[in-house]
Image (cartoon, rainbow, N blue to C red):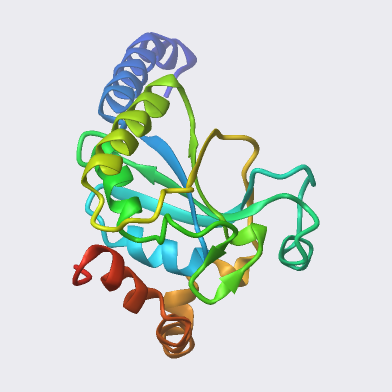
Length: 205
C-alpha cells in the first residue's frame, strides 16, 4: 500500500475510532459507592453480594487514623478503624436507599462496639456516607426506623462522612466463597442470624 493511499485513509480511520470511543463512553455503566461497617466484614460481603445491582464488594478498614493498617493492627483496637465493606453498585438497578434498608436488617444496631460474638471498636456499626445526598438518605431512613423499629433498645449505629478506605488483605476478600465450611461455622457459632431473627424477625435470604 502506497504512503499516499495510506494517508488518504487516516482521516477515515480517526473518525471511526472517535465515534467508537464516544459510543463506548455513552454505554459505560454509571456506578456509585456505599460503605457500611456491620461487624465481621466476611458476613457483610456475603449479605450484599446477593443483591441484584451490586457489582462488587471489598472488605477493608475505614474510620481510623492509621494509614494502610493491617488486620492485626485493627483487631488490637489501636487504629480507630472499623471493619467495613465498600460496595460498588449500579444505581439504575438498585438505589442507595434500598442498600441502606438492607444494611439495617443485617446488623444489630443496638450494641456499641460489638456485633454478635465480636467485641471491640473495630466491630462497631456505622454508615459512611460519600456525599450530602447519601447523608440525607440515611437521615430519613434512620428517622423512619426510629419510629417503626420492632425492638425497644436505642439505635447506636454511627453515621459519619467516609474517609479513606483501605482494602483488607487478599485472604479476607470473598472469604465466604473461598472457605464456605469455615465461614458457615463461624456465622452460626457467632450467633449472627439468631440475633438478627430476634431483632427483625425471620431472616430473608
